[in-house]
Image (cartoon, rainbow over the protein chains, first blue to last red):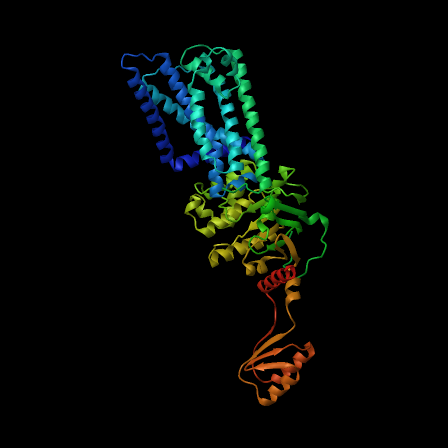
Length: 257
Length: 327
């Protein structure tokens, strides 16, 4: 399995480095979009309005949205592009089984994306004047967030396997995700305070905002629920993906696009 | 295992069970529902032994690719069973270790990666330890005469080189069964010949090869056995040699230099020959053939050839006959 992870990392890196223009363009667009949003918000709020903690929370929300958008699209777009280029069936010929191969791919592409993300965060902090903190405990809610994100990625991958063309779903999902990640559900009251633990990724994003923007330490009890949330969504994602794989093999449509 | 060439000896009808690499039993696949429903493959049973090349032939849409994909575990059969090296790839993914495949219409390779990187990647994907995959990859590149291109991105290689590399990648995990779907399609003459030579070598190593192609001369040249599928059903399956013999008649074609005298003409006709200028067609008994050759003395002989069907004729006849009997 370590060998698989290594070659997936190598493959991802090589494919990135041989044609870096498309990734760099993506980085510039991501950063510019944020800067545009930031300038618009400042214009509407007026020059005297102090964003303070809220600005930092918005930066965290935006960065997490960018990352999750990438994660969630990752498997579905990968499947579609490999079905088009004609390598998908070779991947499904692996004795490891498709879920393990795609999980290794997910880890590999996340590693690369994460490195790029650090660059985006630093750029955003420079552009917006936001000051975020990076305590070591950040890694825990980040992990549970990524698990839930990949759960959704496997579900989208499953859609790509069964329905083939999923651009529309992915497009709509972007906005749903923006709402989920940018809205501070952790500050909600009443029934939403409990329900938010059932929503995908929400408990983890709340904790990340606490750690990075509000300088609040990690609440381990809340983290336990966030971890459960991550594990549950990942398990459901893998289960749905396996079902979709069986369905595609039954329909004989694995490589179709 | 070194194997005798098919022309040197006929294979035993029922070889020892241990040598069976692929066995499919009653494979059936139906697509669609209601009025759209059609049976793509019906009760297909095939057996393939070590070192054997089976040409799996059929018109477009006959069910070849569906069968190959069912064997590779990529399409799930509705009924029937696939066994590769004793295991069912649909139930045990470890059975996929014994299968290598080059699938038609697919690139089969990552074009941004070099041959060396592709071989290492797919080796690990097939559960070969990374270092061994790398070493084996270099050996295969050397053997397939691609060593000097090992660091060139695949997209910059010629079509022939890409196809050779796809076959090398399919062999990286040392599989017992190689599935080749149209391996010579779109290749120029030289590249086609190279791929054919490689297929022969691979079979001689003891691997079983299931080959589909529309180029029937390629099938005739490479295969030990032929299975012809039409509308999802196998309509013929036997050794290539015996199939060709069955469809060949016993007539001889002779060609002489110059023209026959009136006396020679009469003698040849008496023996059952038909003269057409310097060409003679003879469909009589073998002893009379020598008498006919004697009658032609002293005219120089250009050629004596027994009529032999080629696979294209056999294929067309079989496919047409079943079409006629079905209508």
